[in-house]
Image 1 (cartoon, one colour):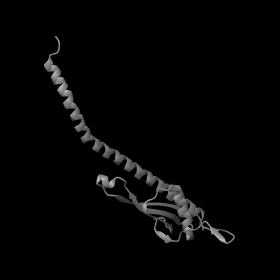
Image 2: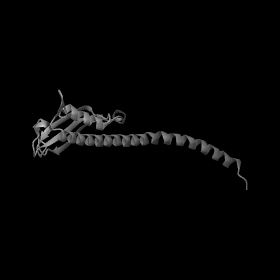
Image 3: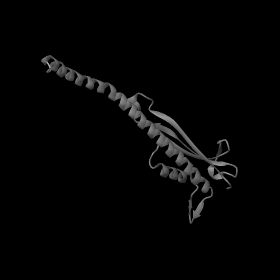
Image 4: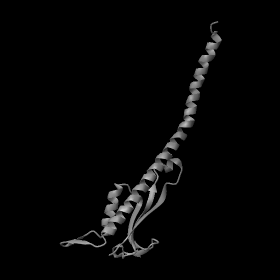
Length: 162
Protein backbone atom coordinates (compact mmCIF):
# COMPACT_ATOMS: atom_id res chain seq x y z
CA UNK A 1 0.00 0.00 0.00
CA UNK A 2 1.21 3.47 -0.78
CA UNK A 3 1.04 6.40 1.53
CA UNK A 4 -2.09 8.42 1.45
CA UNK A 5 -2.07 12.15 0.81
CA UNK A 6 -3.36 12.72 4.33
CA UNK A 7 -0.31 11.05 5.99
CA UNK A 8 2.08 13.11 3.86
CA UNK A 9 0.28 16.29 4.81
CA UNK A 10 0.56 15.52 8.57
CA UNK A 11 4.26 14.66 8.26
CA UNK A 12 4.98 17.98 6.55
CA UNK A 13 3.05 19.98 9.15
CA UNK A 14 4.78 18.11 11.98
CA UNK A 15 8.25 19.03 10.72
CA UNK A 16 7.31 22.70 10.45
CA UNK A 17 5.97 22.75 13.99
CA UNK A 18 9.05 20.93 15.27
CA UNK A 19 11.38 23.59 13.85
CA UNK A 20 9.62 26.21 15.94
CA UNK A 21 9.87 24.03 19.04
CA UNK A 22 13.63 23.62 18.56
CA UNK A 23 14.02 27.40 18.41
CA UNK A 24 12.04 27.85 21.63
CA UNK A 25 14.01 25.10 23.39
CA UNK A 26 17.29 26.69 22.31
CA UNK A 27 16.13 30.09 23.55
CA UNK A 28 15.31 28.58 26.94
CA UNK A 29 18.41 26.39 27.38
CA UNK A 30 21.17 28.57 25.86
CA UNK A 31 21.14 31.33 28.54
CA UNK A 32 21.35 28.75 31.32
CA UNK A 33 24.24 26.96 29.60
CA UNK A 34 26.08 30.27 29.07
CA UNK A 35 25.62 31.26 32.73
CA UNK A 36 27.02 27.90 33.79
CA UNK A 37 30.04 28.38 31.51
CA UNK A 38 30.65 31.94 32.78
CA UNK A 39 30.53 30.60 36.34
CA UNK A 40 33.17 27.99 35.52
CA UNK A 41 35.39 30.61 33.85
CA UNK A 42 35.06 33.02 36.78
CA UNK A 43 35.90 30.31 39.32
CA UNK A 44 38.92 29.30 37.26
CA UNK A 45 40.13 32.90 37.03
CA UNK A 46 39.67 33.37 40.81
CA UNK A 47 41.54 30.13 41.55
CA UNK A 48 44.39 31.12 39.20
CA UNK A 49 44.66 34.56 40.83
CA UNK A 50 44.81 33.04 44.32
CA UNK A 51 47.56 30.62 43.21
CA UNK A 52 49.57 33.49 41.69
CA UNK A 53 49.20 35.60 44.83
CA UNK A 54 50.19 32.72 47.12
CA UNK A 55 53.29 32.09 45.02
CA UNK A 56 54.09 35.82 44.92
CA UNK A 57 53.77 36.18 48.70
CA UNK A 58 56.06 33.18 49.21
CA UNK A 59 58.66 34.57 46.78
CA UNK A 60 58.45 37.97 48.47
CA UNK A 61 59.01 36.39 51.89
CA UNK A 62 61.94 34.40 50.53
CA UNK A 63 63.49 37.57 49.10
CA UNK A 64 62.92 39.47 52.36
CA UNK A 65 64.55 36.74 54.48
CA UNK A 66 67.57 36.67 52.19
CA UNK A 67 67.91 40.47 52.27
CA UNK A 68 67.55 41.40 55.94
CA UNK A 69 70.95 43.07 55.75
CA UNK A 70 71.45 45.66 53.01
CA UNK A 71 74.13 45.50 50.36
CA UNK A 72 75.95 48.82 49.87
CA UNK A 73 77.82 49.44 46.64
CA UNK A 74 79.29 52.91 46.54
CA UNK A 75 76.70 55.45 47.64
CA UNK A 76 73.72 53.18 46.87
CA UNK A 77 72.12 50.65 49.21
CA UNK A 78 70.33 47.67 47.67
CA UNK A 79 68.14 44.87 48.80
CA UNK A 80 66.35 45.64 52.04
CA UNK A 81 63.69 48.14 51.01
CA UNK A 82 60.03 47.20 51.03
CA UNK A 83 59.85 48.44 47.44
CA UNK A 84 62.39 45.74 46.48
CA UNK A 85 60.10 43.09 47.98
CA UNK A 86 57.11 44.63 46.16
CA UNK A 87 59.06 44.51 42.87
CA UNK A 88 59.73 40.79 43.38
CA UNK A 89 56.03 40.21 44.09
CA UNK A 90 54.90 42.18 41.05
CA UNK A 91 57.38 40.27 38.88
CA UNK A 92 55.94 36.93 39.99
CA UNK A 93 52.31 37.94 39.41
CA UNK A 94 53.09 38.97 35.81
CA UNK A 95 50.62 41.84 35.81
CA UNK A 96 47.76 40.10 37.63
CA UNK A 97 46.71 42.43 40.44
CA UNK A 98 43.79 42.99 42.75
CA UNK A 99 41.71 46.15 43.02
CA UNK A 100 43.15 48.31 45.80
CA UNK A 101 46.08 45.91 46.16
CA UNK A 102 48.29 46.56 49.15
CA UNK A 103 51.56 44.81 50.05
CA UNK A 104 52.74 44.74 53.68
CA UNK A 105 56.04 43.29 54.86
CA UNK A 106 56.67 42.99 58.59
CA UNK A 107 58.44 41.02 61.30
CA UNK A 108 56.07 38.62 63.06
CA UNK A 109 55.98 36.09 65.86
CA UNK A 110 54.92 32.44 65.58
CA UNK A 111 51.22 33.42 65.63
CA UNK A 112 51.66 35.93 62.79
CA UNK A 113 51.31 39.07 64.94
CA UNK A 114 52.98 42.18 63.53
CA UNK A 115 56.15 42.99 65.52
CA UNK A 116 57.37 45.93 63.43
CA UNK A 117 59.88 46.55 60.68
CA UNK A 118 60.83 43.44 58.76
CA UNK A 119 64.50 44.37 58.53
CA UNK A 120 64.70 44.17 62.33
CA UNK A 121 63.55 40.52 62.49
CA UNK A 122 65.60 38.51 64.99
CA UNK A 123 66.24 34.79 65.32
CA UNK A 124 63.01 33.07 66.36
CA UNK A 125 60.85 35.63 64.54
CA UNK A 126 59.47 35.50 61.04
CA UNK A 127 59.14 37.86 58.13
CA UNK A 128 55.58 37.95 56.83
CA UNK A 129 54.45 39.22 53.44
CA UNK A 130 50.76 40.09 53.25
CA UNK A 131 48.91 40.92 50.02
CA UNK A 132 45.41 42.34 50.40
CA UNK A 133 42.86 43.72 47.97
CA UNK A 134 39.60 42.92 46.21
CA UNK A 135 39.19 40.33 43.47
CA UNK A 136 36.86 41.78 40.84
CA UNK A 137 34.48 39.36 39.13
CA UNK A 138 34.07 40.11 35.43
CA UNK A 139 30.56 38.80 34.90
CA UNK A 140 29.17 39.62 38.35
CA UNK A 141 26.82 42.39 37.22
CA UNK A 142 25.56 40.27 34.36
CA UNK A 143 24.93 37.35 36.68
CA UNK A 144 23.45 39.49 39.46
CA UNK A 145 26.13 38.46 41.97
CA UNK A 146 28.41 40.48 44.24
CA UNK A 147 31.02 42.30 42.18
CA UNK A 148 34.10 41.64 44.32
CA UNK A 149 35.47 39.55 47.16
CA UNK A 150 38.08 40.52 49.73
CA UNK A 151 41.41 38.68 49.45
CA UNK A 152 44.08 38.38 52.16
CA UNK A 153 47.11 36.24 51.31
CA UNK A 154 50.05 35.82 53.72
CA UNK A 155 53.31 33.98 53.68
CA UNK A 156 55.78 33.83 56.57
CA UNK A 157 59.35 32.56 56.70
CA UNK A 158 61.54 32.18 59.77
CA UNK A 159 64.52 34.45 60.28
CA UNK A 160 67.58 32.53 61.39
CA UNK A 161 69.52 35.62 62.44
CA UNK A 162 69.89 39.30 61.67
